Image (cartoon, rainbow, N blue to C red; front, side, top):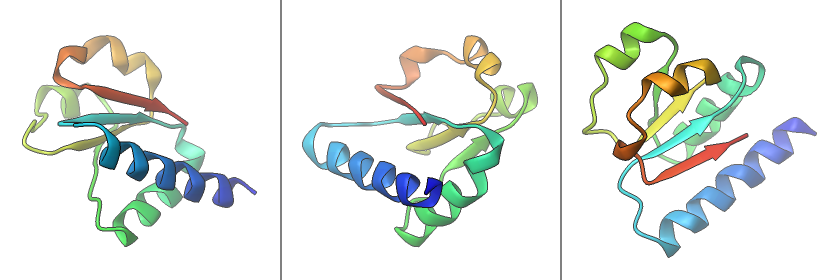
Length: 89
């Protein structure tokens, strides 16, 4: 059931991308679903950068448009002004 929900989630995000001008987005998801989400995103030619720890935040490359954060406590370390879309799964 979770796999179906992730596929719907991706479809909804793609619809949002087509509707509004998103320059950089962040998806917050737990570790249990992260691998499947990344696999499905890559199948649809989306290649997210995964933020796993503080070092990933320090070295973040803002040339990418899609980021995945698996630890919500790291959100406070990110500059939210660099994202114009944040989704939580």
